[in-house]
Image (cartoon, rainbow, N blue to C red; front, side, top):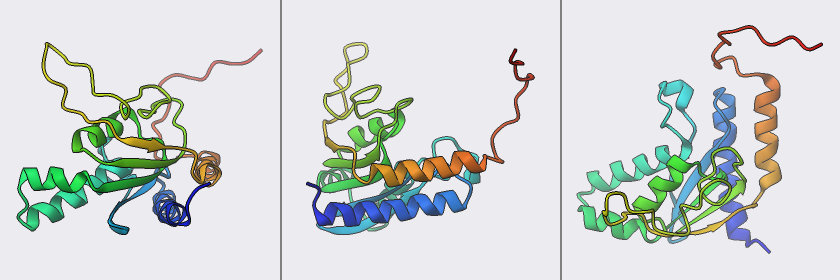
Length: 182
């Protein structure tokens, strides 16, 4: 059974996803929590910023890094703070975001629906459960984090369905005609 606290934080992430939907973005939202308090929020802003890396998780991480840098925290203090943070996001983090969360040292992630095309927390890759594979004999820099999915998944899926049913006016136009069906 999911705790009332987890549901409350996921509801805040759903609110961020609705803000993304209202802005004609793919409806993903998140919150980062430390000691039972929301310390950062994020929503997809890839279209608004014309930057494909501006996923909800990256937005929230950047908010925190900016706050902590402004407060004069050292890199080791920032790393220590991430160890005490939990992220609540409406959709399983993609491979890029799961990797960033692993590198940041986040303690745990709670997500809504699975990401069957790009999921980095079990659907495609499992970047949360093991250190990344060393490249050229380098020491892996990622850390494992606890990951729990399926929280308010139906609400998250409904937001995606709404987004795709309304059509995406920001989607690129096809370069070739669609194949005719016989």
